[in-house]
Image (cartoon, rainbow, N blue to C red; front, top):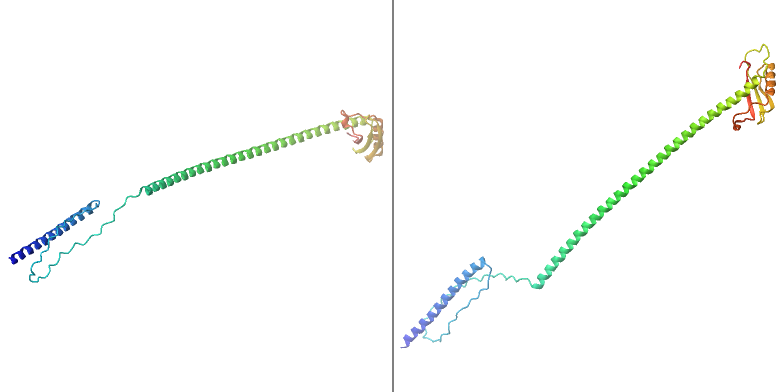
Length: 263
């Protein structure tokens, strides 16, 4: 009886070892399947439950002949699992959102400020151009006014010169007419000597009063014929008072009178 009991115990131990070996292989196959699925989809935590059979009461059998221990099947290398990605914490996400909003607001404010600065520069440029145009227009008007004044002054000077020239010419004509009337009166009193040679000229300086009365007669240039010079001098004194000018301002106190016997 003892040998039969020993064989039963030994068979039970074998069955337990076989079951454990099968369980290990099944776990290995499941691990491979789960590894392939994990590469194709989002990794999920895998929970594996191992069934541990109840401890079998150890029955010490009779020592069989020594057998070499069977090598245990190699365990599959454990593959490194990527660390799970933790979702951002609520406070960090809120801070990032606020930071993005702050940056966007700052960027909008910067663009708005640049737009306002550009509009301000454009307005200042238009104002400067407007002032420059107004300045050029004012300078043009001032130059035109100066030119018009210069032309007006030139025309006035020319008109005055013409008027003066006309007045001088009129005065010269009036003066010549005044002298001619005096000479005509004096010639009417000149008794030309007989056998008067040629047509010599005698010049006399006469001093008169505003009334025409002669107060002095002097021979300025002799004609070369004394008889003719004396005849003219007597005629001048005889013609007193001399004719007066048409205008009092044309009166001349000192007269220079020229006479020729044939005039």
